[in-house]
Length: 168
Image 1 (cartoon, rainbow, N blue to C red):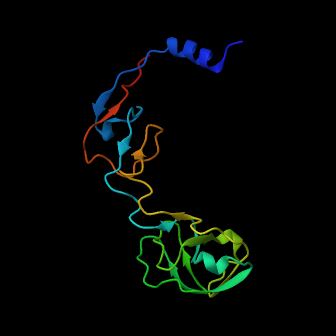
Image 2: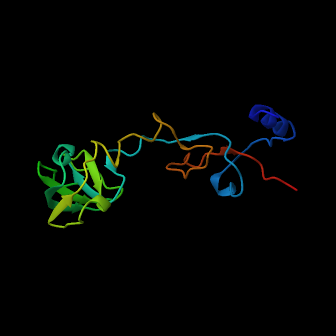
Image 3: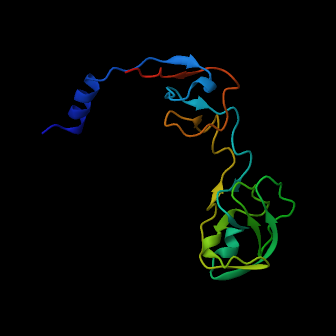
């Protein structure tokens, strides 16, 4: 019986790797990116919500169930204008910047969905459902790695290495 490594070696011995061509993104349809493309800046620029729910202080939900007063709503794309204080929560949408005072986002599924007051039924660790500032970008990782995740920033029109189109 072959080991995985032996089988892989046999398969790869029969494969001809295509070279690379530096082309513009607009010409890349049907091709495979051959190198990571780094982000131009750290993203997100500040902590934001990874879920729809409620921005809270983890200390306030350490014992559940608990009811917190809802003091506002924060859609994505708007800057927070109020801070989360002890005993309060702000309804928050995915991608919205975390308001001052909040360190956790409680996903709506473990709440009663309240608009003036919200009952939270489960404790969550500090930082749950928060996309930390600078968690993606030049200092952390490629924004469009070879595994083909969507680009968060392109090279500003520069050309990038893609495999040539396969011909039959």
